[in-house]
Structures are given as C-alpha cells and as structure tokens.
Image 1 (cartoon, rainbow, N blue to C red):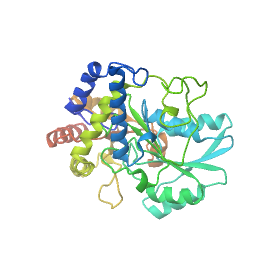
Image 2: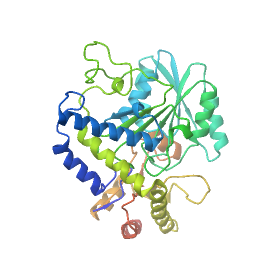
Image 3: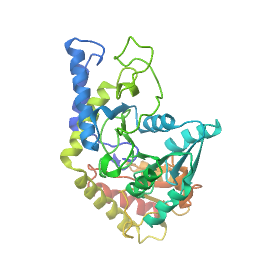
Image 4: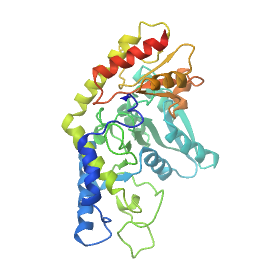
Length: 378
C-alpha cells in the first residue's frame, strides 16, 4: 500500500505511538480522577503529562488544554460555546463542514448568522474582506490554518489582530497543518485552537484538542461526571474539568502524547521541508501534461501547505481515485467535506483528487504515484 491520504489521517503511525497505545492497556487500566489507588493515579499522571506536552507544543497554559474526540468535536464546542442568541460569525471561504454545518444549524434555529470572507492571494485584501464582514454583533472569526483541499494558507495572525481590535474572538481550525506548520497560540494571538490529534500530530484516530486562552470561557457542550466536585449538581467552572465530562480516552491520549513527542523530536520545520520536497516533485512531474489539471501553483510566491489537488480531464475525481486504488495507491477523490473551498475553485461539481504526503512518504512512493497518474492520463 502506498499512502497519500494523510489529510484524512496520518499513516503509518510512529512505532513509539503504536507501542504507547499497546502498553497503555496494561499501564493505564484504571479510570483517572475516579480513585485514589495507585493505578488510577498512574493514569491521571499520564494524562497530566500529555496535557503538559500539548501545552508546550502550542505555547498554551496546561489547564487550558482540553482533550476531545477530534477536531470536529472541538469546533462544535468552540462555536456553540461562544454563540449567544443573535450572534454573528465570520468564516473564510475555505472552511470545512465541521465549521459550516454547526453554523448552519444554529442559523436555521434562529440563534445566529454568519458571513463568508473571501481569501485571495493578496493578504491585505484578504484581511479587508474579513473586516468588511464584521458587524456590531460579530462574536468570533473562524479560520482554517490551511485548506484541507488546496493547501491555501490565510494570513491568520493578521486576521486575528484585526478581529481583536473590534473585540471579536479568533478561533483557529488547525486540523490541517498542525504538526508541520508552526502553531504558537500566543504568536498567532488565537483565543481558541481546535486541532485533530490523528493527522499531523500522528496520534490515534478519535483524539483531538480544544485549546483555550485565559481570556475566553465558552459555555459547555456537554455536562456530566468529571471526577471532581462530585457533590455539586453543577458543572465545574474551571478548566479542563469544565469541558471534559465522562471517562477520557486514556489509550488514545497516551498515543497522542507520544505523537507530539515524535513531532517535537523530528521538528516541524524538517517535516514541512520533507513534505514540500515530495509535493513539489509530484507537481513538477505532472505540470507538463495538458490532460492533467493542477489547482495549486507552488511557485507563485503565495504560502501553501503540502497539499495538492488535481483532476484528469474527462474523468470524475472519484474514478481517478478508484483507478489509483487498483494500483495500491491511497488518495481521496470528491469534495473532502469542504464544499465552500470547491465552490471557490470551481470544482464543486467534479471534486478533486487530493494528494497529501507525510514524514514517512519517500521518493519512491512519489515516483510510483506519478507514473500511475501519467498512465491514467494517457
């Protein structure tokens, strides 16, 4: 199997992550925060260390790191947590359905409205588009770190800075990019970061992060047992307990912790350099073919992450992906849960085939992929 679908979930996982998950079933068998005996305390200590590792990685405060089931849950928690009756949101025209669908539901129920700001190659124009969408009742801007389809990277720090001038929160969707792009909460000036644990951080599926600044305290999405303040019928007011109801995914968190350690050792800049080398090789090899449509130019001077979408003329994206699958190549065809991005790029009716490499992708994998695409194109 040759895997180029790391935008969906990373594969393979580092051995350290696999081993950590396997060992966790014996080492962390008790429910953390639910007992004073040794094994329960051992689980709680592991989770605290994992929380600290994530806080250091994103330059956040440890108590403000919340473990979730994935970025989709984190985004729902962030959006619904800051929404009040009559609220208005501003999002980019690259956002994933994990942003758009919660907003659509809130809009249809009459709780909020939202506007879509256009991202352009001109950063100043992009920022103006966001500012022009602001209203008196705008509570938050939600923006992706990188498009999961086209690799386009909005100027998030500049957008966050302008939002704060108007007293508006900035929520970052870092599902695509965290692990190979730098995500420093304080440098970005983000109020909330939502992140997948199973993509660029190499953690297991079913893991995610909701990271809060000290200045924001969203309402809760769910309530229930936290292992703390059990005498109270009310949810705890302090983080992370306020946002972590129920038994945590101990084994997933153990793997995610090791994934973050792996990225820190390999270093984001090295991972990005490697993935860019792979993706630019594929781009350069496919560009001369008139029968292949490429939607990203990696040499136009506009910052992009290593994500390449393409189509073969006269073929649906799903058909091309299926033909590649017959050759043992894993890519994703279709809309990638991001119809706004496809509408922006004129591919809503046909979708695209997406190529996303990882730290473990080698040049032979890329060469084989390119040769298969060329054969299909001919």
